[in-house]
Amino acid sequence: MYDVLVIGGGVAGYYCAMHCAKNGLNVALVEKEELGGTGLRWGCLPVKRMADDLKKLKDKKDIIKNCKEDMHQIEENIKKKMSNLGIHIYFGEGSFEDQHSFIVGSQVLKAKKIVIATGTSPCGFSNIEVDGKRIITHKEAVNLSNIPKRMVIVGANVEGCEFASIFSKIGVEVMLIERENNLLKGNDKDLIQPLQDRLKKQGVKFYLGLAVKEVKKEEKKNLIILEDNTTLETEIILMTAGRKPNFPKGINKLGIITDEQKIKVNETLQTNLAHIYAIGDINGILGMAHVAIQQGVLVAEHILWNKKVTTNYKSLPRAIFTSPEIAGVGFQESELKDQKIPYRVGYCCLKDTWRGFSKRIEEGFIKVLVGEDDRILGIWMVGKDVSELVGAFGFLVDYGVKIDEIKRSLLVHPSLAEGILEAVLNIKK
Image (cartoon, rainbow, N blue to C red; front, side, top):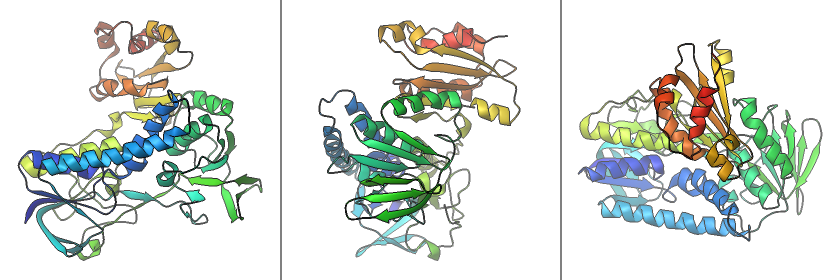
């Protein structure tokens, strides 16, 4: 019998299994496809690799080839690390036999503790059937054999905007459809506008406030008909909206409480069966890779030492890897207005920092939002590589740091991080 059985080899399951094994537990992991999951193989990491390659490759069409090679190497690295720690890896789609047993092929795996980390999958819309060839998801988008001339992206969410940014840069004629009236719903307009302007310069055509009415497949093309009867012609349709949970087979035998979208968990990520946990996207808390990684580590420590650590997701750093990037932590202005929380704001343009000047940065800014008591409520930014700054700023919101403490802090000069001090100094009393 294993001490811990992890079902799912994405980042949540990987980090949980590794942390348990490093601390002496006998661990098995089951993966039905490829190690790394959505985050490392088809989602955030390959998209970021493609974006990085755009900055340096002469032949932009090599970005997908390089991405494929990298993703294969990642799986090999994960497999090697887990094997070195004595983790037993089983490939195949298994099924629960009972509350302590999971069957994979002819193997019956028994464990004292079980961690479900099976994630979610793209599901598209009910009126658009994904075929993996002409109507695709992110999984196929990072594995395209040929770069299309035209692409329609359905959904101007984070994923849709990131792919629009990448494919329009390599010469694809991109059409972006969004049923909402704005890109990136829920984000402040001043954060979105620089991205929208850049995408427009790269030739992206926007169809906002419109839903897809119908898709017609012809011999060599797809026709998308919007609700206002606009018809778009394209080779590839990339669906970025909608996800469904990957419930492991046999879960209905266990009496675990679920709903249509998730497995329900408590604050320590346990299901209603205390020895079974659910981490990552499958628990529906927040569908982000860095949340999944943290949950994997926290569950491992709960199993190992009964540590009970809860997370304040209000100070969760976020980043959108478009060009320019958008990143931030804490409240946005729209949220403060909706909740009628008084605030003041200070801006610093990145080009006005000495490092921004030396790097010839022409666009982007840092925005600091503070409350009546001078505590930092939110820090948001737009510009080149701002994702590298945001992680270090999370604690300022998490610990309710006051702006006077920023003024007393020493920041490296010259650096873009100095922009936070400039933004604070620009806050009016």
